[in-house]
Amino acid sequence: MTAPTPITLDHCLALDADDPLAGFRDRFHLPDGVIYLDGNSLGPLPAAVRTRLERVVEAEWGRDLITSWNVHDWIGLPARVGDKIARLVGAAPGSVVCADSTSVNLFKALAAALDLRPDRRVILSDSGNFPTDLYVAQGLVRLLDRGHELRLVEPEGVADALTDDVAVLMLTQVDYRTGRLHHMADLTRRAHGAGAVTLWDLSHSAGALPVDLAGAGADLAVGCGYKYLNGGPGAPAFLYVAPRLQDAVRPPLSGWMGHEAPFAFDLDYRPAGGIGRNLCGTPPVLGMTALDAALDVILDADMAQIRAKSQALCALFIDLVEQECRGHGFTLASPADPDARGSQVSFRHAQGYPVMAALIASGVIGDFRAPDLVRFGFTPLYLTFSDVWDAVAVLRGIMETRAWDAPEYHRRAAVT
Ligand SMILES: *Cc1c(COP(=O)(O)O)cnc(C)c1O
Image (cartoon, rainbow, N blue to C red; front, side, top):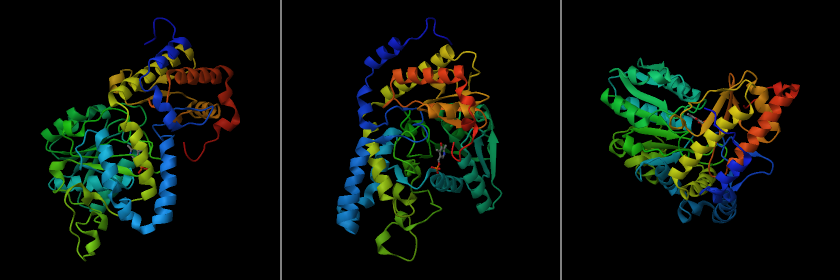
């Protein structure tokens, strides 16, 4: 949809002047000359994380050494950080732990979910799921060697594929490529109607839009700490188990940190009560501390305001690309309806790779997803409406001058 009158820079500046979240930008370290449209892949550095890490390194690890497990309650970090994340995903206190990576948590959660439906053999997922989720499921099927099957359908076909052989419905709520948003409450209700357990991956949802795990009746969930939660590269991830299932869940990675009494050093495993049994090994204190401090920034913001601004930024970007870059080969790959999207926008473009490489070289950082998607994340706590204007102006310049066609932009990097 094209706006009836052309969008101007003044319009964007007026939106900035009215922005209730404008004050949050100063709480992030953002390099000069960069418009960062990749917070959906790696969140930037919150200023408070740097000071907090300095303190942990010097006063806790450096000075108080091993006593810090008690004195600074390092041992309580997975639960404490989990409770902060719980507030962002509509979960009760004591139902989320921070631990491991998303991939590892998915393994733990999927194994536990299959164990809750011992008579069924199908893991249902969709072809828009993030590959690591599918790879982990494939590896688990092989490891179990009990005839399980990973069944993939198109995202639009999930509801109809909920047959009575499905043990687990395993979905990522927001499609990492297009931003298409699954209706969590509706699909959870249908899955339960078919007797299946639900496992949601919230990697592109947590911190980006309101999530209501408890309200949706979800069973298990996992999600990522380094995307919208800004926990830093390789930040620990999280795992949710609905309170009603916590004592039924049998963790497949039965490590000592999930033991009822780790420091009794018993020879036999006994799971802790509650969510804590889903821990495995020692928490990565530095990484988890960074995530802990980063979460405080998001928790100070109003999630409804975050969602409203995210939708407005995405809509402005789409309208501006259509207005400024018409005829340059971009096709919207994300749903046009703001309520059907997460917090990102993707366009297909035949020269997507060099176009994105040229954009990044000009200070507008998005990313490329094979085969032909240029992807842009919109993160309301540190982006302005005039950033969107400026980003599209740079894109237009690259297209008009064909700057993207320089040989260096065609060379593929190891990480895209
Ligand atoms: C980002 C992402 C992951 C990342 O998993 P890691 O274990 O952190 O590498 C997993 N699943 C989804 C859906 C993601 O978007």
